[in-house]
Amino acid sequence: MSVRLLHYSDIENACDDPVRMGRLAGTIQSIRGEDAVVAGTGDNTAPGVLAHYCEGRQVIPFFRAVSTDIGTVGNHDFDFGTAPILDVVSESPQKWIVANVFEGEREGGRGVPFAGLDGTTVLHRDDQRVGFVGVIDPATPRIAPTGASELTVTSPVESVQTAVSELGHSVDQFVVLAHLRSDLETDVAAVDGVDAVLGGHVHKERHEVVDGTLVVRPGANGQVVWEVELFNGNRSPIATRHSTAEGPIDESVADTTREQLDDVGLLETVATVDDPIHRDLDRRTCGESRVGNLVADAYRWAADTDVSFVHNGGLRTGRPLSGEVTAGEVASVNPFGGRVDVLHVSGEQLRTLLQAAFRPHREDGRLWHGDISGMTVEYDTEAGRLLGVAVNGQPIEASREYRLATNSYVAYSDDWPIPHEATVDSFGLPFKAVADYAREEGLTVRVDGRLQEC
Image (cartoon, rainbow, N blue to C red; front, side):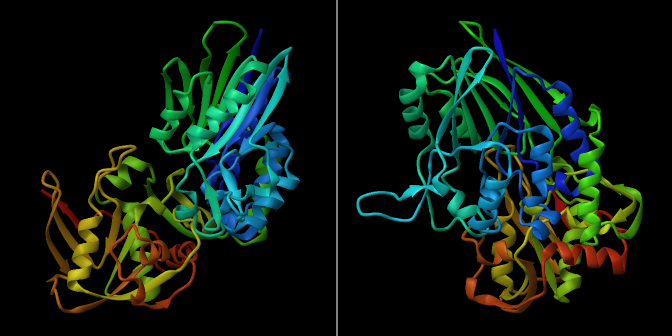
């Protein structure tokens, strides 16, 4: 006997693409059966452009169409505060679980479980009992844009250990729903008694065995569904990868997504692109990219500044921008809230920011974490050292003041060396700035040598 788990995660801006949403739903439905458990592992309500208009509720028709059985939350599910995600929880069909998130304070304790959600549950399929626990990244209160700062997120490893000790003797299989960075994902997989970890959060696929435990992660934006088969007995779980690009389309889900986009004006054609602008992770994080230049140029145009800087962790993958491009498609490149902020910074502060943009990433080896406009930057990539910076063709002056356009995350996050008191003005939502720029200036964007590596 066996139980199959159909696993999706980090849908994010797939909700801005009717075809992708239709194929994701169609793929799950095509392999579903009475023995299957459909599971999601966070960041399925946000980020995305449509998400801003619906505060995450745009994904509820998808949840209902595939009859999701169980899920946990991710950091971006708190993008609009705690009230909207509670609405999604109450209106969606699945059982929501999370074991390491607490709210409020009480004397001598860490508060009460978030929204009163259970940390664990047991589902029955074909006379098998499968135990589940949900855990999310302890950094969530810091990295969620809003709504999570008052939450307490405890150790996911300890939560999994406790869940296994409480449920392990009464279930045939034990599964972790994990919205964690890779090292913590590996740590929970190593907990004795865990049979499989369904991962999320990191936008890189994973399929491996850790200390005898199967670990899978589908990556982002609804492009992959993992089918995990759990066997009763000593046989190890197995996983099959399903690409949604090859799956059937659920036309009802696609039509609903299309209607949602149309209702808020996101199906308007804003530009035509002859040479497709690719958005994949490798292109935009290993040096200068057309999509990065597009967003940086849009920020500088919107705020009319000397220069701009965009944290490219806020850019998202998706189908290339090609042919007739809609407002929703171009906005989905940078689908976050916050504001385009203008800061007055010295040349020395600007150099410090640019130096900080060159750093290896623990998860996927990315090196370049910023996109720029109005500047030319030269790096020694082997030494990891900034060699030179020019602003509008002139060498940067350490004591001169420059007007810098950036997003709120860079302006206020402790992750970037920016003086927090330096914000001068704000110029609207970043994703709207990118769409307005495309509408007014077109999408003739190229790699022009603004980032030079030697």
